[in-house]
Length: 351
Image 1 (cartoon, helix red, strand yellow):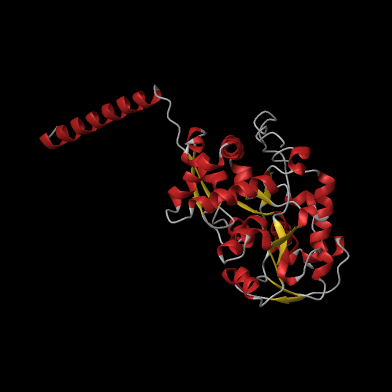
Image 2: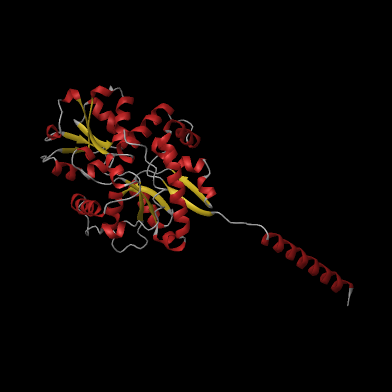
């Protein structure tokens, strides 16, 4: 045997011994790689985002063996599309937007599925100023209403109009930042938007709280579900335990957010340092009161849906959104990944 061969054999033996020692060390240690999950919100890092950012900041997802990356969004429609495309594993989106995607894309694979209801009621609402003389929904008939073309309240307006027996209105389209400005300037008579967004935006543009007239759809005969946690069929099939762990950790954090919303805003500020903290505290509290811990949520249970109500919504969305095919409620929702009842006991006591 040459000196070179002896050296090579010695080196290989040393490497083998080192590998065996390393394997033995790993075998005696509990090591679990965190499952990565890319999560897309429906909107910017505002007050309601604390429901997701708080459990992340507290480490609840990591404790569940998950590496969750939470990104801001630019609308529910975009969130649904990105989850469907595989860019994101899970997201937070309006149930109506999810239904619309399903019905308009019947042949598209990997259509997202809603797995936990968070906004039991739609936040959609119509707004006017008292100086307009608008006091009831009936006063909106014949008026000029403003909203972006993709606004949830505008798209579901036919449902609101039918529930309140309203006649025709005229729509004016604009980008989201101009909506409340145009109402304050008098360019439109009313607008549609989310209750916890438009009312604060109107105040920020000079409208006093007692000058604002608001018609929350949920209080005027429209029982649409709002935002839900959605997931791609791929992750539901390939890693169901990770999905279940995510929902359980989320529910734990959401309970703390609803119990102490002011403190939870710190998790939002950590992601966007220029937010108006006091404003976002108000936004979060309005969202909790009106859509997360609403009377309907208390009646149905957090995270869950009632199938007859879901079926009615599917029919209403199909009609109002003029979808290509009918919405199949069984295709857009599954309760199979929800945590145990005790883990879903997160709503604050009724006031």
